[in-house]
Length: 322
View 1: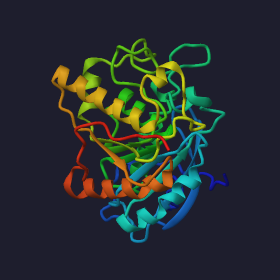
View 2: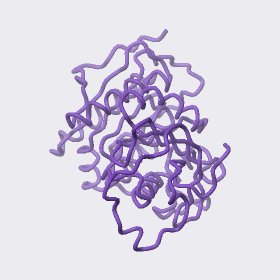
View 3: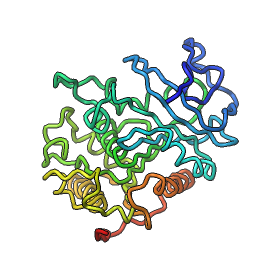
View 4: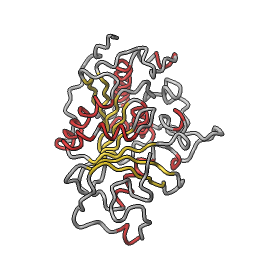
């Protein structure tokens, strides 16, 4: 990915990439500055580890520091520009700034480094939170905030496929993140929010304990679990078919419903407030570009009303394979 060195997330303001003085960090712009519109690629250096994250972004016309920000997490190919481009039309329609980090396979290798959060080091010891992939999103958002590119207090979060795996586990392990609302689309398999199933299919013996308070926070987050209604191929080449994954269902529609219902049942059992919703997207298979317009519309609804515009079904959706 070609990068613009030492810039703040490719939004190309004058402060980009330079170390801010304490005075500059403490000052908030009196008026929301206009942002450089269009598509950008940039590199962000994480403040504690000094690892670099490449970022693809898109800023619609008229955007300023009050414009809602949507972080988009990619599938296993980590093709940030493609995911960014799939959101451009919706970003223009609804007025969102899109930020898509690309976690390098060198620094965040494989499923363990990306989907599972880089929670464990190569020697098997737990990594500190600053090394987790999940904590990167708040770091990026804080950078936007400190550089004056956003006056928002929170951000929206979307992930598709492996990106959905990232998102739902991020919500599980760092529910205190500065998320306004999240949409998780079409994970191939899930970490169920219970301690009956062994990690990584559940939280039993997870490398980081998820206590009752964290479980309560997770249930109280505004999360929409979604999947294309036609994402029902039990033999999809990227669909995990281990015994534990198959116990969650034969395809992504079934597995998404199992994840949602497991969380709902747990919340009811322990008396947690439960703010999740579930919805399939008609006419869409396993396709980020097909899900993006629906997700953007739902974020726009949340921006207006503080809730997603969906009605969660009472029974499992039909998931007949093609």
